Amino acid sequence: MVSESLRNLLLGEMQLTPEVDVTILSPHESGGDRRVNLYLYKVLESPALRNQDWQARTDDPTRLVPPPLSIHLFYLLTPYAVNDQVTGNAASHLILGEAMRILHENPIIPDDYLATGLDGAREQIKVIQNPIELEELATVWTTFSQPYRLSVAYEVGVVQLDMQPAKERSLANRVRQVGVPDVRAPFLPPTVESIEPMSAPAGSTLTIRGINLTGWRAYVSLMRRVILSGVELSGDSLAVTIPGDLAPGFYEMRIDISHLTRKTLFFEVTP
Image (cartoon, rainbow, N blue to C red):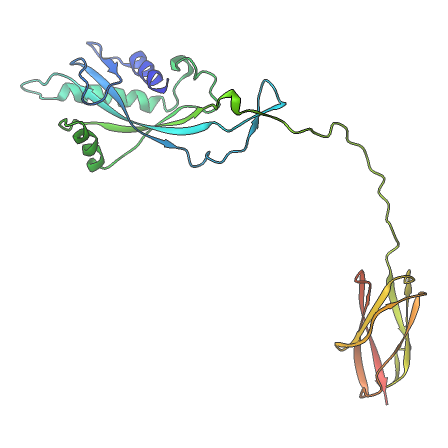
Protein backbone atom coordinates (compact mmCIF):
# COMPACT_ATOMS: atom_id res chain seq x y z
CA MET A 1 0.00 0.00 0.00
CA VAL A 2 2.83 2.41 0.77
CA SER A 3 4.61 1.63 -2.49
CA GLU A 4 1.34 2.14 -4.33
CA SER A 5 0.84 5.49 -2.59
CA LEU A 6 4.34 6.67 -3.57
CA ARG A 7 3.66 5.60 -7.15
CA ASN A 8 0.37 7.51 -7.15
CA LEU A 9 2.15 10.63 -5.88
CA LEU A 10 4.90 10.52 -8.52
CA LEU A 11 2.50 9.75 -11.37
CA GLY A 12 0.13 12.51 -10.28
CA GLU A 13 2.75 15.24 -9.90
CA MET A 14 5.34 14.59 -12.63
CA GLN A 15 5.35 17.26 -15.35
CA LEU A 16 7.80 15.81 -17.88
CA THR A 17 7.18 15.32 -21.58
CA PRO A 18 7.06 12.63 -22.80
CA GLU A 19 5.42 11.06 -19.77
CA VAL A 20 7.47 8.99 -17.32
CA ASP A 21 6.20 5.72 -15.93
CA VAL A 22 6.70 4.75 -12.27
CA THR A 23 7.52 1.11 -11.54
CA ILE A 24 7.94 -0.91 -8.35
CA LEU A 25 10.44 -3.55 -9.46
CA SER A 26 13.65 -5.17 -8.25
CA PRO A 27 16.86 -4.04 -9.97
CA HIS A 28 17.05 -7.28 -11.98
CA GLU A 29 13.49 -7.00 -13.31
CA SER A 30 13.06 -5.32 -16.67
CA GLY A 31 10.70 -2.40 -17.26
CA GLY A 32 10.18 0.38 -19.75
CA ASP A 33 13.00 2.48 -21.21
CA ARG A 34 11.71 5.74 -19.71
CA ARG A 35 10.71 5.37 -16.08
CA VAL A 36 11.60 5.90 -12.45
CA ASN A 37 11.70 2.85 -10.22
CA LEU A 38 10.95 2.46 -6.50
CA TYR A 39 12.70 -0.53 -4.93
CA LEU A 40 12.02 -1.45 -1.30
CA TYR A 41 15.39 -2.73 -0.09
CA LYS A 42 15.08 -2.63 3.73
CA VAL A 43 12.41 -2.70 6.46
CA LEU A 44 13.08 -1.83 10.12
CA GLU A 45 10.84 -1.76 13.18
CA SER A 46 10.48 1.66 14.80
CA PRO A 47 12.50 1.65 18.07
CA ALA A 48 10.52 4.60 19.46
CA LEU A 49 7.15 2.83 19.10
CA ARG A 50 8.27 -0.72 19.87
CA ASN A 51 7.06 -0.90 23.49
CA GLN A 52 3.74 0.91 23.37
CA ASP A 53 0.98 -0.06 25.80
CA TRP A 54 -2.24 -1.76 24.80
CA GLN A 55 -4.89 0.70 23.63
CA ALA A 56 -8.69 0.85 23.78
CA ARG A 57 -10.47 0.38 20.48
CA THR A 58 -11.92 3.60 19.11
CA ASP A 59 -15.22 1.89 18.24
CA ASP A 60 -15.44 -0.21 21.43
CA PRO A 61 -13.72 1.23 24.54
CA THR A 62 -14.36 -2.02 26.45
CA ARG A 63 -11.88 -3.89 24.23
CA LEU A 64 -8.09 -3.56 24.35
CA VAL A 65 -5.95 -4.11 21.28
CA PRO A 66 -2.21 -4.76 21.22
CA PRO A 67 0.00 -2.00 19.84
CA PRO A 68 0.46 -2.09 16.07
CA LEU A 69 3.71 -3.13 14.43
CA SER A 70 5.36 0.19 13.52
CA ILE A 71 7.92 0.01 10.72
CA HIS A 72 10.09 2.25 8.56
CA LEU A 73 10.51 1.44 4.87
CA PHE A 74 13.68 2.20 2.89
CA TYR A 75 13.48 2.72 -0.86
CA LEU A 76 15.89 3.26 -3.71
CA LEU A 77 14.68 5.76 -6.30
CA THR A 78 16.33 4.98 -9.65
CA PRO A 79 15.73 6.71 -13.02
CA TYR A 80 15.88 4.89 -16.38
CA ALA A 81 16.17 6.44 -19.82
CA VAL A 82 17.80 5.64 -23.16
CA ASN A 83 21.31 7.08 -23.35
CA ASP A 84 21.94 9.77 -25.94
CA GLN A 85 25.12 9.63 -28.03
CA VAL A 86 25.92 13.23 -27.15
CA THR A 87 24.35 13.94 -23.75
CA GLY A 88 24.69 10.43 -22.35
CA ASN A 89 22.31 9.73 -19.45
CA ALA A 90 21.19 13.36 -19.04
CA ALA A 91 17.59 12.27 -19.61
CA SER A 92 17.70 9.98 -16.58
CA HIS A 93 19.18 12.83 -14.54
CA LEU A 94 16.20 14.99 -15.50
CA ILE A 95 13.78 12.24 -14.45
CA LEU A 96 15.56 11.80 -11.12
CA GLY A 97 15.51 15.54 -10.44
CA GLU A 98 11.79 15.74 -11.15
CA ALA A 99 11.05 12.81 -8.83
CA MET A 100 13.19 14.32 -6.06
CA ARG A 101 11.41 17.66 -6.44
CA ILE A 102 8.04 16.01 -5.93
CA LEU A 103 9.15 14.11 -2.82
CA HIS A 104 10.74 17.27 -1.43
CA GLU A 105 7.54 19.27 -1.97
CA ASN A 106 5.44 16.51 -0.42
CA PRO A 107 7.26 15.33 2.73
CA ILE A 108 3.92 13.88 3.86
CA ILE A 109 2.01 11.84 1.29
CA PRO A 110 -1.22 13.78 0.59
CA ASP A 111 -4.48 12.01 1.39
CA ASP A 112 -5.52 12.14 -2.28
CA TYR A 113 -2.68 9.78 -3.20
CA LEU A 114 -2.97 7.33 -0.30
CA ALA A 115 -3.86 3.79 -1.32
CA THR A 116 -6.94 2.10 0.10
CA GLY A 117 -6.24 1.06 3.67
CA LEU A 118 -3.96 3.99 4.51
CA ASP A 119 -6.55 6.76 4.43
CA GLY A 120 -7.43 6.12 8.09
CA ALA A 121 -3.87 5.63 9.34
CA ARG A 122 -3.10 6.90 12.86
CA GLU A 123 0.32 8.20 11.83
CA GLN A 124 1.15 10.40 8.86
CA ILE A 125 3.26 8.74 6.15
CA LYS A 126 6.41 10.88 5.92
CA VAL A 127 9.01 10.73 3.16
CA ILE A 128 12.58 11.72 4.07
CA GLN A 129 15.72 11.52 1.98
CA ASN A 130 18.11 9.05 3.60
CA PRO A 131 21.74 9.65 2.60
CA ILE A 132 23.67 6.36 2.53
CA GLU A 133 27.23 5.49 1.63
CA LEU A 134 28.11 4.58 -1.93
CA GLU A 135 29.34 1.21 -0.67
CA GLU A 136 25.88 0.30 0.65
CA LEU A 137 24.31 1.40 -2.62
CA ALA A 138 26.74 -0.70 -4.61
CA THR A 139 25.97 -3.73 -2.43
CA VAL A 140 22.32 -3.58 -3.44
CA TRP A 141 23.20 -3.65 -7.12
CA THR A 142 25.84 -6.37 -6.88
CA THR A 143 23.35 -8.57 -5.02
CA PHE A 144 21.35 -8.77 -8.23
CA SER A 145 24.46 -8.91 -10.46
CA GLN A 146 23.50 -5.59 -12.01
CA PRO A 147 25.78 -2.66 -12.85
CA TYR A 148 25.43 0.31 -10.52
CA ARG A 149 22.95 3.00 -11.53
CA LEU A 150 22.55 6.45 -10.06
CA SER A 151 20.03 6.16 -7.21
CA VAL A 152 18.75 8.14 -4.23
CA ALA A 153 17.63 6.51 -0.97
CA TYR A 154 14.48 7.50 0.92
CA GLU A 155 13.01 6.54 4.28
CA VAL A 156 9.23 6.31 4.58
CA GLY A 157 7.38 5.99 7.88
CA VAL A 158 5.84 5.44 10.23
CA VAL A 159 3.75 2.62 8.77
CA GLN A 160 1.61 0.81 11.36
CA LEU A 161 0.27 -2.70 10.84
CA ASP A 162 -2.65 -3.59 13.13
CA MET A 163 -2.68 -6.91 14.96
CA GLN A 164 -5.32 -9.56 14.26
CA PRO A 165 -8.66 -9.28 16.16
CA ALA A 166 -7.95 -12.60 17.89
CA LYS A 167 -5.24 -10.83 19.92
CA GLU A 168 -7.74 -8.45 21.54
CA ARG A 169 -8.82 -8.73 25.17
CA SER A 170 -11.50 -7.24 27.40
CA LEU A 171 -10.83 -4.19 29.50
CA ALA A 172 -10.70 -4.84 33.25
CA ASN A 173 -13.70 -3.70 35.28
CA ARG A 174 -13.51 -0.07 36.28
CA VAL A 175 -14.91 1.88 39.22
CA ARG A 176 -18.22 3.26 37.98
CA GLN A 177 -19.08 5.43 40.99
CA VAL A 178 -16.85 7.75 42.91
CA GLY A 179 -17.93 9.11 46.27
CA VAL A 180 -16.45 11.36 48.92
CA PRO A 181 -15.07 9.24 51.77
CA ASP A 182 -15.62 10.23 55.38
CA VAL A 183 -12.06 10.94 56.47
CA ARG A 184 -11.41 11.45 60.15
CA ALA A 185 -8.25 11.46 62.21
CA PRO A 186 -8.07 8.13 64.10
CA PHE A 187 -6.33 9.76 67.07
CA LEU A 188 -5.02 13.00 68.48
CA PRO A 189 -1.25 13.03 67.95
CA PRO A 190 0.92 13.17 71.06
CA THR A 191 2.85 16.37 71.69
CA VAL A 192 5.83 17.02 74.00
CA GLU A 193 5.77 20.54 75.43
CA SER A 194 8.31 21.08 78.23
CA ILE A 195 10.74 19.71 80.78
CA GLU A 196 10.77 20.77 84.45
CA PRO A 197 12.92 21.96 86.03
CA MET A 198 15.22 23.40 83.37
CA SER A 199 18.24 23.04 85.68
CA ALA A 200 19.08 20.61 88.50
CA PRO A 201 22.03 18.70 90.00
CA ALA A 202 23.12 15.33 88.57
CA GLY A 203 20.93 12.44 89.77
CA SER A 204 17.80 14.62 89.99
CA THR A 205 14.40 13.61 88.63
CA LEU A 206 12.96 15.72 85.80
CA THR A 207 9.35 15.83 84.62
CA ILE A 208 8.51 15.84 80.92
CA ARG A 209 5.06 17.24 80.18
CA GLY A 210 2.93 17.06 77.04
CA ILE A 211 -0.53 16.56 75.54
CA ASN A 212 -2.23 13.30 74.48
CA LEU A 213 0.61 11.16 75.82
CA THR A 214 -1.57 8.54 77.52
CA GLY A 215 -1.27 5.07 76.00
CA TRP A 216 1.84 5.79 73.93
CA ARG A 217 5.39 4.66 74.65
CA ALA A 218 8.30 6.92 75.50
CA TYR A 219 11.91 6.65 74.36
CA VAL A 220 14.34 9.08 76.01
CA SER A 221 18.05 9.49 75.31
CA LEU A 222 20.58 11.87 76.80
CA MET A 223 23.51 12.70 74.52
CA ARG A 224 22.95 9.30 72.78
CA ARG A 225 22.74 7.60 76.19
CA VAL A 226 19.43 5.70 76.56
CA ILE A 227 17.48 6.70 79.68
CA LEU A 228 14.05 5.19 78.88
CA SER A 229 13.11 2.66 76.21
CA GLY A 230 9.50 1.88 75.34
CA VAL A 231 7.95 2.86 78.68
CA GLU A 232 4.12 2.94 78.40
CA LEU A 233 2.65 6.25 79.54
CA SER A 234 -0.37 6.47 81.83
CA GLY A 235 -0.73 10.24 81.76
CA ASP A 236 0.44 13.41 80.10
CA SER A 237 3.73 13.49 82.00
CA LEU A 238 6.62 11.18 82.76
CA ALA A 239 9.48 11.28 85.26
CA VAL A 240 13.06 10.89 84.10
CA THR A 241 16.04 10.53 86.45
CA ILE A 242 19.23 11.94 85.03
CA PRO A 243 22.44 9.98 85.65
CA GLY A 244 24.40 10.93 88.74
CA ASP A 245 27.77 10.92 86.95
CA LEU A 246 27.05 13.94 84.74
CA ALA A 247 29.41 16.87 85.01
CA PRO A 248 27.95 20.37 85.33
CA GLY A 249 26.94 21.89 81.99
CA PHE A 250 24.20 21.98 79.32
CA TYR A 251 22.82 18.71 77.91
CA GLU A 252 20.57 17.70 75.03
CA MET A 253 17.66 15.34 75.76
CA ARG A 254 15.79 13.69 72.88
CA ILE A 255 12.25 12.48 73.54
CA ASP A 256 10.44 10.13 71.13
CA ILE A 257 6.76 9.24 71.67
CA SER A 258 5.98 5.95 69.84
CA HIS A 259 7.99 7.22 66.84
CA LEU A 260 5.15 9.64 66.08
CA THR A 261 6.50 12.74 67.77
CA ARG A 262 10.10 13.68 68.43
CA LYS A 263 11.39 16.67 70.32
CA THR A 264 14.77 17.84 71.61
CA LEU A 265 14.94 19.76 74.90
CA PHE A 266 17.92 21.26 76.75
CA PHE A 267 18.54 21.42 80.48
CA GLU A 268 21.45 22.42 82.74
CA VAL A 269 23.22 20.19 85.24
CA THR A 270 24.20 22.41 88.14
CA PRO A 271 26.98 21.77 90.68
